Image (cartoon, rainbow, N blue to C red; front, top):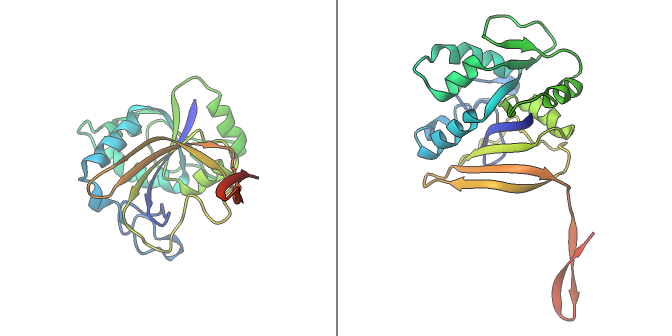
Length: 212
């Protein structure tokens, strides 16, 4: 399976608490709910619906799993995201036993890198990560992510958890899809590639790029 990471993100790179003011207040975060004012933007529904059409299995961190478990089983009107989330296999990275029920959920055993590598070797379409910023950052560091899908809202919030923090492993990216809306939502789908650097020099009176 391909491992894909899906995040709502602010212009300043924050992925924490997009869905509600009290969704995730850890580390004193008080600016939650920033993506919901854009939920009626047609691009929002098209992009998110497209994500779940490609889902085979799901991979969550504990906090995101608990937030979703509390909400999505209540949605029974055939919403594509709800159908996928409520019916497909869900793998949860956590150091303690799962509490509460959500069909198809199981705890990931052993080391995260080894366990996720084994999941990727299984037959199937996509193993999708939604939210779960700490887990996604760990998978980025391990080089396990095949594609990043980012829906960026035109807001800044300052403090908050980021997918790519100051200690993130440097990588380059190829843009495989990009879309934007009149309201300023921007969608980027990116595949990682080698990190490259270069400099400039003046040759025969012209500025040229000099690979490192």
